[in-house]
Length: 183
Image (cartoon, rainbow, N blue to C red; front, side, top):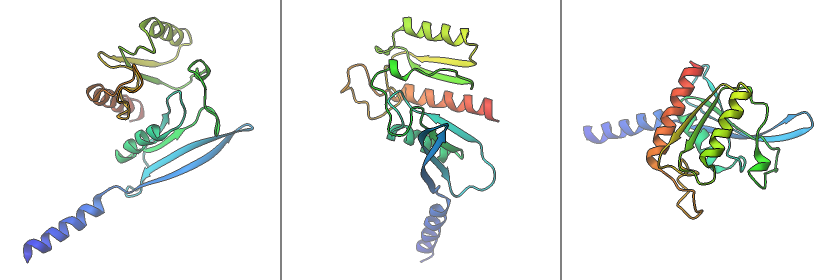
């Protein structure tokens, strides 16, 4: 009987210690444009916590971006996945998606063997960042291709494939970056 009670108590304690993520879709405005975002945080934590802005891929705010925001919230951050295009607006091509006027520190984690972004374009990107005096860190992962952090990439799109090793390393690099600039 003691064992059953201890097990029940353990399960009760474990269920109380589990993070309860609270999520909200938020519309916000800049000028006349309306944007959409996704806010997520651990409801069990109290007090001030660092906030993280999560940028989406060129395709726009989606489930993958929200999953990464959730992962950060489980680590104790308040995460907000923001929209750079406008509510319901999505680009039709990579060329349409290029960002301008970067003011924040930038971390770029890139698949070194990405067929969609050849090394010639990587070099041009780095020159552009340097010319614009953007504070950035650029890390490439050998053997990784496009979309290497997204487990849904199973190779259906030629050149996009999940790489668990590079995903893990890039996640750790991102956490080091966040710890350096936010703590």
